Amino acid sequence: MRSEKVTFEGTQGKLAARLDLPEGRPRVYALFAHCFTCSKDVFAASRISAGLAELGIATLRFDFTGLGASDGEFANTNFSSNIDDLLKAVSFMRDNYEAPRLMIGHSLGGAAVLAAAGGVEEVEGVATVGAPFDPEHIRHHFEDHIETIAKNGEAEVTIGGRPFRVKKQFLDDIAGHDQKERIANLKKPLLVFHSPLDQIVGVENAGNIFAAAKHPKSFISLDKADHLLSAKEDAAYVSQVIVSWARRYVKGLENPELNSRFKPNDDHTIVAEAGTGKFTQTVNSGGHILIADEPENYGGDNRGPSPYGYLLSGLGACTSMTIRMYADRKNIPLEHVSVQLKHLKIHAKDCENCQTDNGMLDKIDREIELRGDLSDEQRVKLLEIADKCPVHRTLHNEVIINTKLVDA
Picture 1 (cartoon, rainbow, N blue to C red):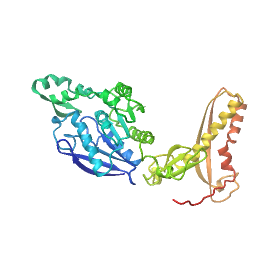
Picture 2: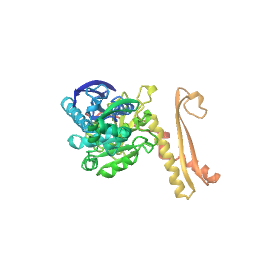
Picture 3: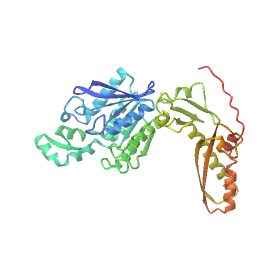
Picture 4: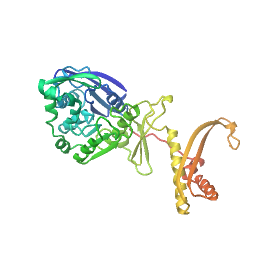
């Protein structure tokens, strides 16, 4: 991933931005809006944006007016000016790169995205993370100062340990937005992320957003995440899910090599370079889209299982399925099967029962756990059946692989 600093004209001067780009040509462009009083460099923004870039999506994140390195006074901003800044960012992207196909917003940035995206024709998908249903939700930050603001027209408020000057016009503005109608009229596929443990914006907000939205809409629980997505793995998960979800709706996210001359069916698997990272591959197996990669210690980005990881997965899945089919057919009270596999390279001289006596050999250790009220005889039989799974047999049989070049 590479990142470029850019600026563009906002509602009160220049807005500081960063464009996170994939190593190859971007498949599509996305626009990210950060949380209330945060900046473009907050963990959630930077990590999600980087994750999207690694998966081929160029993502612009910027500081709203009066925040971070952007021009303007925060005291003169409001929710409406945030929406205007987002639309300014859309115009900048449209004029200099491509208009965003995805708009993503975190916290109040998510509410702003919900308000703005309906008016951006090119947007084909919208995602929110920990977003409030109504911008007036942030009024709780000012509860102790509302009388002072009403009397004096403004007050200094501490938010997140930093002082901000808040004017009466800000409170008046957040009270004047009908988000329910905007969400109902969004007319864009919507993906809602929220943590049930969010202490800043309660998960009931996600329920209200989801209820107001029309289909297609999806909800993803972020389980143990906090509001700011402080854990790197939570932000990585969000970016991965966004890309997987958006493939259904956003033109350009499908891998062109996988959708040109090759048409997958049940017995075909198509693999092509993803264009992001050194080794990352997009796999289309019977219409199921997967990612393959190498671990970081082998020079990869660890975006998916390695080729040997898929080999072991195939053998493990086949083993478990074969055992299940046999147990069901013979009415064996098998409750659960799990298979653990490990691939090793060993010296042929260390193998007592192998025909090859020099060089290196591939060794797969396979451990099978069987749960249920099983007799010793049934366990032995199921272990015997494991060796009869078709993939196991394929690995032991002579395999013919025909390879030829085709015209691009």
